[in-house]
Length: 530
Image (cartoon, rainbow, N blue to C red; front, side, top):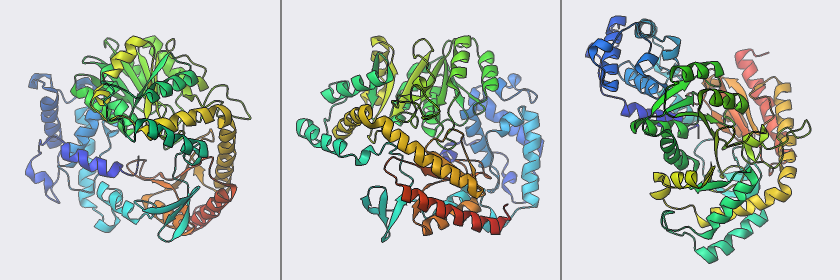
């Protein structure tokens, strides 16, 4: 989900508005003045937001003109197209330098400094193009696995330990899950072929009832995937006049859904990651919005941090807003009644129950995927009543999309049954394995993201160059992980992301620890780490 960010960013750069600066700005050694940048930005704002010239002032903030996290990304992409490659503009710059005048001066300084001190092409690994090149040097990417044996995969003639799978509960390998698929296929065929607007196999009703019971909600509605769910549901919830408040670290699928909602008339406002004061300020600025939707992840996929959901609920009640939670990673792992012995909680019924909150009373709409803990292709959203279900069932991605595979519906139902009887034992095993790896990584000397021992173990290695070295060493030791490098994470905080599942073994954890020691030793020699 993160390693393709470079490709996606390149795609959106192609979609940037064709509003060019003067051709001379593309010359290698031309001095780009703050005045020229300011004039270009003013033109961009006029065209993008259809503003008369009299409403443009260089001393107003970007927020004053309606620039949000989505349009800031578009503006950055448009500016990048007019600047010599090698300078990456992050959307955060618009908040750090909030006025057109201040931003233009800062950007002029950056551009002209880069022009006078332009590094050689081979060393510019922080640009998008060189990040893409870095991905080509990382052996853990784009591999072809020819066999699998539990959490071992056969790649290029040898067995590799799999720490990239997010099948947290190990249900992809569970015999009862596998055995449940064939009877369903015999009954319904491999594919029902209906849009849900016409008919649905009874498997849907069985799955939605089981999900509703686990979550303690009146009803749920199943979609083919989380991405399809977001693209259909978020625009419906926001409507044509609502305002969406999106965390800067929200998952890419949420960002794309907000882009679509914006095209249909909604306003999208970004706020700094997990910064409740910034969110409160933005809610105050847009307090008159007819609909206010706060969009967050339940557990963030690169940091493994939990959203402070009670604090978001408090703001939602204060400002008459709704909290929309994507708990793709949390569902199946975190749940009700956490204890010191089992800090994930019990039953795996999600971040809402983990905090002891209530959906309707606390203004929460909850969604998650089934593709991680429950090893099935599908997703769901909670529905407070029949009216909400009917409303969301008209989402274009539900009506104009193929149905979930019969095999996935059957495997999800079987997985939920196993969760009732074995889930807490499996979560205890995941917790024990995760604690062992995190403790060892920190003892070696690494920084590890997160404080809750969640089975996303993100080991910080620093620069992109360090990540390349680290990944190669892990590969030599037979370790498959998910690398996290810019732009998925900040340039100086490249990560080695280990995903721990109940199907991993103590021996595999030991093998990962040995590999991490080798990584640290190599990086210490190169960077004088202590």
